[in-house]
Structure formats: C-alpha cells, structure tokens
Image (cartoon, rainbow, N blue to C red; front, side):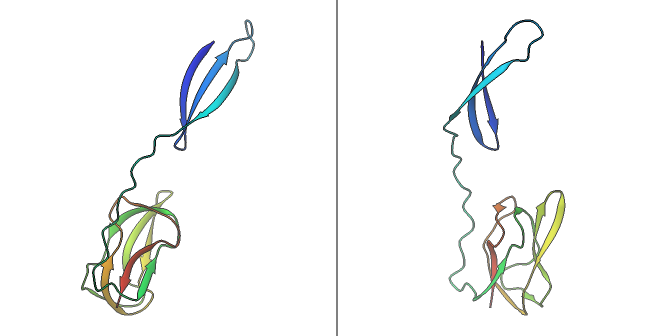
Length: 121
C-alpha cells in the first residue's frame, strides 16, 4: 500500500493505492481532505464617485490588461479591460459613451462571467 496526496482543481485528496498481484491494475481509494483556502485577492476599491454604468465581464477568465484609466473618456464599444480565457484575449467594452469612474479589477485577477470590472459616468 502506498499513500499519495493529489490536488485536482484546488481540491486535495489523500489516496491509498494497493497492488493486487503481478500485472494487476492498482486499486485506489480517495478521501477528500480540506483544501487550503488561499486568501482572495482584493480588487481595488471603487472610487468614491463610482459610476452608475457597469462594465461587466462577458465570460469567466483572468484580467489580462486594463485598457482604460479612471477619468478617461470612452465611446460605446471601446475596450476597457481585456480578459484571457482559454488562451484567447476577450475585450470587455464600454456599453455606452462615458467617462471611466472606477476600475474594479487588477491584472491577474480571476473573474466570473457577469463580474463588474469597471464603472462609467
């Protein structure tokens, strides 16, 4: 019998493997173990004058690049944030004309679909 610790998608498992004779496939039994919880990365706080127009992620991924700055004017369709998902860069664009009031994500942050990445006035 051999014991292993395996991590799959952030879940940690203690696994015991037993061999059943020569040439036989090993038999494994896994018991979940509490996964260490990493402290969530805090997103930058919204500015006091955070805008009423939300710029939301269309897909889950990681923030790859911030294209706009607070105070910058943007037109409808201008990229505000670029997220990376499955090795593709996906622009998150301004839903309408406005001025960037806050950037609510940082490069490297993992975001879910629908997460607010920025606000506009």
